[in-house]
Image (cartoon, rainbow, N blue to C red; front, side, top):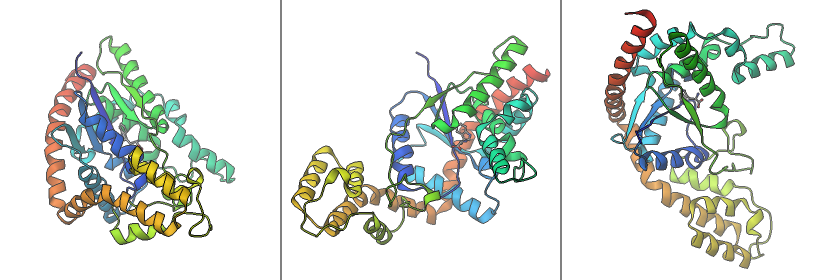
Length: 334
Ligand code: TRP
């Protein structure tokens, strides 16, 4: 079987938290490192500019996301890791693709439609209020991200399936028109949420609920946040029900089966929430203290991150330049 081109992008729009780590980063890295396929992972910095309009904050987010993946073990020898900003061919392709995309397809994109609906619900006179063209054409740049590299498979969460479908339909329209395979027609590889990680209050961990535990906060802060995890007010030595306990849920996310079993028994026997949370803190910290050190080191030596991204960009561009040449020739004749 020939190797597949697998590519996915990560949008730097906030400080990564434990939910991102368990739900996305950790399983993705396992897949990438165990695979013989050609993996590309890139920082979708230009996509983030649709919403992040402050250069300092923007830089912070880009470095945070890049350092996070590297600290969690991303092996740049196995995965081509680069930033969108270093691949200018993407913009040439975006334009070409836009000339083959019915505007209606973008009108129907979920993210845009949701914004329009919000305006309508709010009674706003202009249904496009607050929609910049970057938001509107977001799916085109994403299609270029995918199509420029002859991507076969795109691992994405459910919310991004439509974007991959848009890329696929643009590719198939162009192929039909030119009666040859100009572009590879990609498919999405839907990554089920491996673990829905609860936030401090029990709802899904999310920036918008303000219930997150930042992945690489200081040990002190981590301890504080773990202490904030919702628990009931039962007496210290009262038996606790592990299955209705958020503390136990968290513990299971980080512990082996045997460790979880032992913890379950302790809770049922009756240990205080304070003691239980101290154990939980240790468990989480054990797993992330190594990566935290690497992360802090990278964030203090950002030129190391730049260097790694540059090396990835050289690999990615070698492909991008060649493919763009081919596509330009086929669509424009030169
Ligand atoms: N839109 C994706 C997200 O919000 C990020 C992204 C940009 C992406 N370009 C991509 C994902 C190409 C996969 C392939 O998460």
